[in-house]
Amino acid sequence: MNLSPLAETAGLLLAGGRSRRFGAEKAVARFRGRALMDCVAERLSQCALIAVSARPESAAAQLAHEHGWPVLHDEPRFPQGPLAGVYAGLQWAKRNGLERLATAPCDAPLLPAGLFETLLSALGAASAAYAATDEGDHALCAVWRTRLLAPLGAELGSMSHPRVCDFLRRHGAVTTHFSDEAAFANANTLACLHALEGAA
Image 1: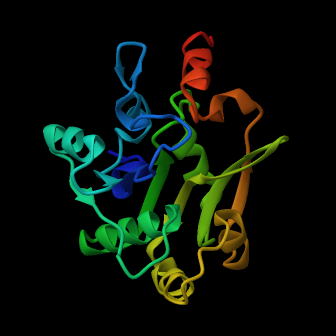
Image 2: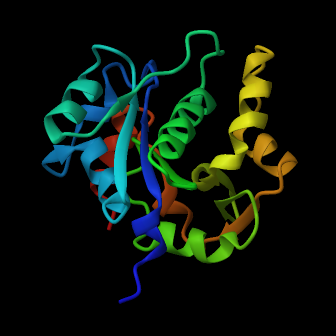
């Protein structure tokens, strides 16, 4: 029986942001009757393990605990930003004997089915693979190899938080093209969330 590559890949839901534009903690905002982060987590459901990158004492951390998912916190010595969460995820994946980490932001509930299977198919020998459309990159929708731990730690340790796509390009990541930009839309504000709820 052939296992999906996702069965040998860790999954990380990125929910560590402060949701300033949203006005409340968006990871647990309701989307079609469920928490927003739960909708996104569906795309990671075939992974070997799932964890959540979240701030201590946050509602996202509490919901993750209710699901039985580990909660990962950023290294205090690193600058704030999503790559600090990815770094913690890579450490966690490596501790669990997995060489790949799939990541998704908590505020993109319409991500395409098969997203991570497609990225894994494109990965080959590259260090990472991430999604892109004609309108731009979606670098947090990605699969990362744990060998990126050292270079990512070095860059964050210098107190610099690079743009995610810039870091990935520097370290040999490949892009995978998707045709539907709307599938990667983020609920950055409450108005955006309501618009996404009405999307097909």
